[in-house]
Length: 261
Image (cartoon, rainbow, N blue to C red):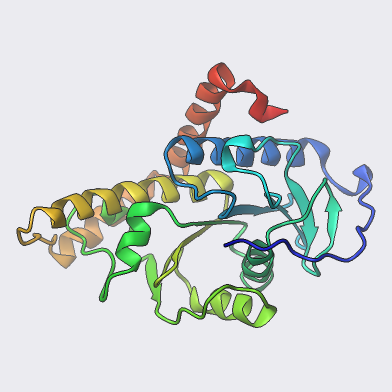
């Protein structure tokens, strides 16, 4: 289900070209997201990928290497890639769809500093149904009210730039894309915000799936209240996301400290 990307000869990335402290912090944050995603069952084998634009650069991004599970990810194992398919730092290559989806997303949507793509089970299940995935019947779902869109045009694996461009174009001004027959993509201005959205998206999807499983009719929240609740949630979202990621790093530092290596 996954394909390694054929890359050009690696370029040389000198440490002086980057803010080493900022890059190190980004590596640790991203590795923590991989590890916790694995714990929560948000991963799928050696597929799925998280990426983040390298701090201080708009032409490079961090991404997980092909062949490693989320539970194996460490800060140093992450690759630095450019938008031309070159691995400029790290051992290995990205999975092909990771490159074509994420490189084109970061290049075409500068606001998408972080891009998390998964086939996490509950959100993906809703992406397999006809009609809108979320029905705004649960409070957690309202975090995403007005922030989602649906990409209806599944075209198989994203193995070329044109499909990556199409996916990037489809996102518009949304932060969450339900990719029909495929999975989800979450983009954010920071690693913490992308992680927080990914986590709560799956929780919202899980709650909706459980409610739908009862066979009873769901009770959507009226649009006016949904919009007001969304606005209330967004007021503290950035700080809440930061604290959420900090809590994850504390847990992992106690129980899986090798994620920082």
